[in-house]
Image 1 (cartoon, one colour):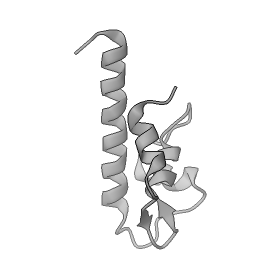
Image 2 (cartoon, rainbow, N blue to C red):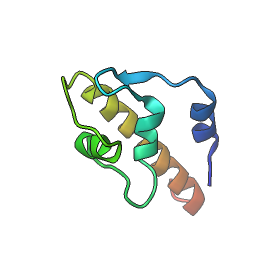
Image 3 (cartoon, rainbow, N blue to C red):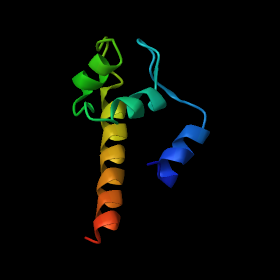
Image 4 (tube, rainbow, N blue to C red):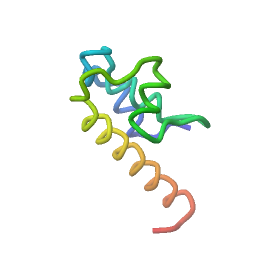
Length: 83
């Protein structure tokens, strides 16, 4: 099930968040979906078949993760009627 926010992110041009591994924000979001979703920056790198190099992207990856998880919480609350 795709929500409006997910569609919005797909329609926007990808932004490179890790120049060492050439990872985009969309790559990070893809690692956060599914049954084996990443929950740490290290798991994001692992899901995408790479590892941290210089570490400058870790803060941005964490922000993307927090935004994605916050969106999941909002969608869950709306779906279940909890606020």
